[in-house]
Amino acid sequence: MSNLEAASLMTIRPRRSVLYLPASNARALEKARTLPVDALILDLEDAVAPEAKEMARDQLAAALQEGGFGKREVVVRVNALETPWGADDVAAVAKLGADAILFPKINTAEDVLKAVAALDAAGAPADLPIWIMAETPRCIMGMDAIAGASPRLTCLVAGTSDLSRDLRARPAPGRIGVISALSIIVIAARAHGLDALDGVHLDMNDDAGYLAACEQGRDLGFDGKTLIHPKQIPGANAAFAPSVAEIEQGKAIVAAWAEARAAGKGICVLNGKLIEKLHVEDAERLLALHAAILERGEGSASAAA
Ligand SMILES: CC(C)(COP(=O)(O)OP(=O)(O)OC[C@H]1O[C@@H](n2cnc3c(N)ncnc32)[C@H](O)[C@@H]1OP(=O)(O)O)[C@@H](O)C(=O)NCCC(=O)NCCSC(=O)C[C@H](O)C(=O)O
Ligand SMILES: [Mg+2]
Image (cartoon, rainbow, N blue to C red; front, side, top):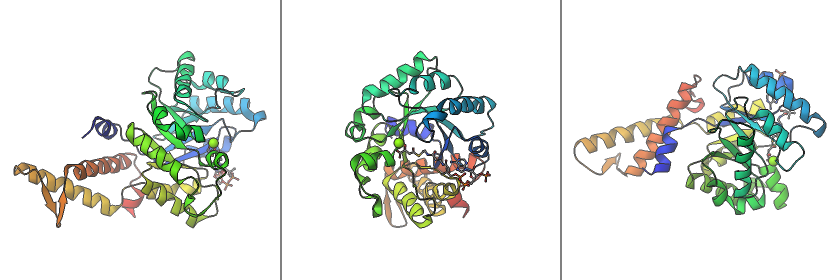
């Protein structure tokens, strides 16, 4: 097992469903504390109108101080540092106990270092993770350097709305206009031991299209999907959780491998298929994810079905 794989096994955290909510929306902040999501992104950026930025910042600070988000990971998306609000956002949220700070419109590795420096200057804990939005063509072109820019960076979030606009890609079946960028994001995440989250599905009434996008994101290798509405949570929780069949197969692989090793064998055959160490490592990662989902206390949506 590589160091990257070992690290990700140790720190595995379900991020199947990651819901954005505007920090200006008091009802959404309240509701978020009750929703079966793995993570929340309290947004100060594009979901908040310019005239509401300060109110949103104050409301977000009050919500974080009040707490009540349970096991949900709470991430704050600040405005880009180049905007009139970015520096004040970072100063306001650096010490409020968020699980991570999400920086939008990152173009270069230097931008990542500036984000870390801004948090440090604001007195944030030295180990506070950052996430970044991968949502500009320059970001995609520089993804390898960006993903490796800082050990504080733990998660890449695809921003398919901004990216589609910048690329002049049209909404099309199979998300053909952004599919290359999505793959690059996953490749960079895997190369640097990070998590990767798929972009949002904007049409809240398109249930079939949404579920297909969840499955596509999972098949591309994403760890979960970013969401805009509570009704999207069950689909993401199901798609990005190991299925019952995958869990049973994973357990069988681990058991067969242990038996083979105990008998002094370096290879193993299960139901006529050769099992190699890489299959065992994959099974162990999947079982660790399943255990982490169960630990959240709600069970795996897929496994429970
Ligand atoms: C789109 C919405 C404005 C719709 O809100 P609303 O009209 O309130 O919807 P409903 O009446 O259907 O809501 C039902 C209940 O659910 C609560 N709710 C709705 N949305 C959320 C949410 N996101 N988080 C928490 N709770 C939510 C309502 O309060 C209702 O509760 P109740 O009172 O009990 O009935 C709204 O969904 C919304 O604002 N969504 C988030 C939009 C957002 O954050 N956009 C920015 C992020 S996307 C992005 O920027 C992507 C990226 O950068 C890129 O470039 O791709
Ligand atoms: Mg965006």
